[in-house]
Length: 253
Image (cartoon, rainbow, N blue to C red; front, top):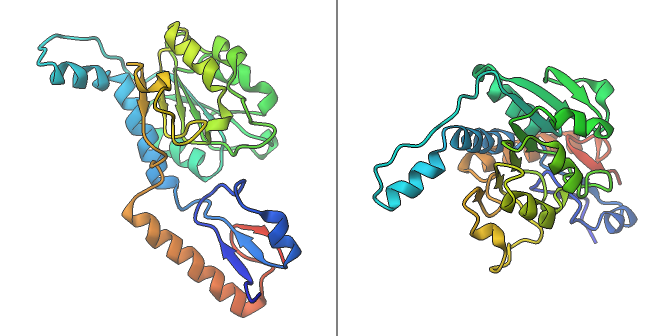
């Protein structure tokens, strides 16, 4: 009965009972921004892994095979980032030293962004058409659910790689499996799936052109320092002016 503030520890809040919080006059904040550095580092690690085919080298190492393979160069390529919030922005910033062209997709393209070009979701096909890597860092909403479907996968280059650090529901997973099996896209790196945990019989476990982590891209020891700092700043705001002007506020009382 005395609850006044629910401070979420994730950027997403689609799993929270927001209507119940509103009915009870509870302020809700999320943790947008605190995961950006570590998630962006994982995106870059995956992009470089696929670009240099390090996953191929790791498999051959386990097999004891001294056999050459071809790698690529990232410079001069196009990277499309779907979602230009804190995580998408952090990804673009970290790509800055690699000599790539960046294309962004966001709900309101008029806001601009850190990428060389910005499209709305209605322009997502044009945005990804030339991209060697398509990075998903957007919220899950009615607008973005199954945004990556069979049609969008067909628009992507056959040597493109999909990287998903958003939500599993942004991707039509059976369509992705079909595209991966048919070599219509080169690979996928997924920190999120639909459902989670990923069922043991999912073909994603066994496809050699897929890299998986169990929704851990946002985890690092420094994350908790950033969460604590965010909460401390909001407690100071509560003491100064109440519950109506908090950082990362999702619901006002």
